[in-house]
Length: 443
Ligand SMILES: Cc1cc2nc3c(=O)[nH]c(=O)nc-3n(C[C@H](O)[C@H](O)[C@H](O)COP(=O)(O)OP(=O)(O)OC[C@H]3O[C@@H](n4cnc5c(N)ncnc54)[C@H](O)[C@@H]3O)c2cc1C
Image (tube, rainbow, N blue to C red; front, side):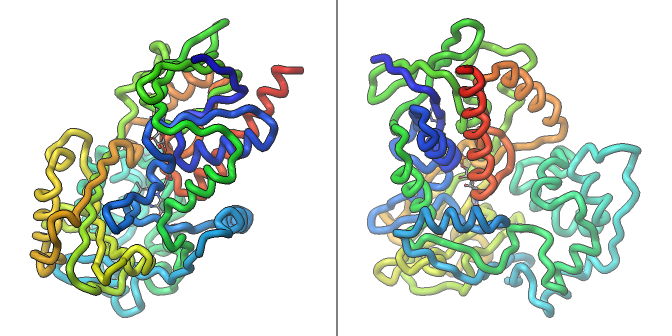
């Protein structure tokens, strides 16, 4: 089967769906291909028997009122909860509220109070995350808060990671002073530390579901793009499989919201673009419904220490009572790993044993029943910005940029660490560029 569209969108996560909705609304015939059986990507809420769980708890928070209002309007048929964030860090055998209260701020602050950023090791930009952190916060804060947890989250040391991630998530102006203001003055340096957030009562999956329902674009799930075909020196068609059948779609413009490495794999080799240089950190999400009522008041708890194999646990009843039917205690445990490594290949039971053997969760052992466990493995959960990634990433994007009808968008498509709001804004901006391109090519 062969079809023609104005715009082909690859990926039915929130970015692809947001771009497609805007393009179709602008009168461009738009088709979305999503390889998974359902849309939503990382922002799915998955069913496990009587339960539902996010792929790691997803909050909605915004820096732009217009984006928040747009999202509230989109979700007007959902019940949006507005909880006050409640989270903690379990470290050294102690549960500490995070962001800190004034009193436990002292515990966090001890290494900070005597710390001082140092001069950059050499002229110019810091080459690694370690340089970036030590320059702003000093070696003591780096060693206490960042060295081990970074290795756990990213699988690499701070000296093997690029400062790009910190620039984006923490911000270039961060210093000992801003950290102390955050600890004691309640002055937030990071957008993620907002005290209230929005949460659809049936899980974050209500967001992509509403995006898909409101979009007039055609959306094919179970449709994996396999190859991009060129005509006249530029991308002109895609071959994809859909329920075992091979189909072809011709397009004027291509929007990619799939992993950047996957997009490069669909194209003939491009000069200077090395797909292997585009790397990811994977995530395994374990779901367990425990036979008890409540464990803590927290939405989530970070586990930075090495003796816990997972990095974050979410208590779903605290996110929404709808996620906790039957008075059970549904939880998710997030294990950072690399695709194919030992953790990635662990069975459900092995993961559950690991989750419930950690110091902070040991008392839960025996509280779950077989059959009330589930697992999701996400190979492209996080763009991995290793030290030196800047150059090959720029080269890959430059090679793609040589084709005026390819547009990247969103976190996964652009290989940039974006939250939901940033994905929406980035995808709408990409949709605007597509419209300009099509208008200009018709003129
Ligand atoms: C654990 C975790 C917690 C998070 N928490 C928050 C939070 O609290 N708040 C927040 O704002 N953000 C959060 N985020 C970020 C948020 O999930 C992402 O920003 C967002 O979901 C990214 O959407 P996307 O569409 O860009 O990419 P994705 O969701 O990755 O979508 C890409 C899609 O492309 C599809 N695809 C891949 N290959 C192909 C192919 N060949 N053909 C067709 N389709 C293909 C995939 O199946 C996928 O559906 C979190 C992320 C993670 C991993």
